[in-house]
Length: 118
Image: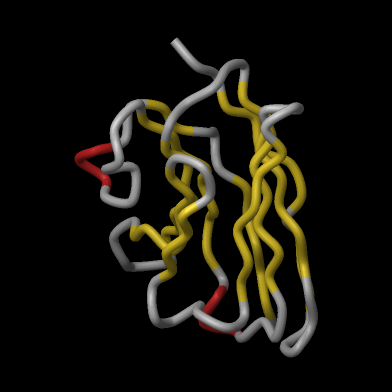
């Protein structure tokens, strides 16, 4: 069992930047970030699998950057040019398979952290 603990988040004005971190208790093949906006279902927005293959959903492409430090078992999400529609609870997620970008493929979840953009 892998435990995921997020940090970061908070409130920021539109156009600003924010960074999230997620410390994992062990290694997993695929790690990702999800978010759940008010009134919407949780959606995968970025993931890294294997040796660093990254994918992003279109709504964050070019603004968000996912990265990880394997030595620290820590996942990051750098969010730039934030918009009010980025307001959501952000979750880190992990899986032993390559399917950590979809809810059904996630084996481990973080507790979530609130990001508010005004």
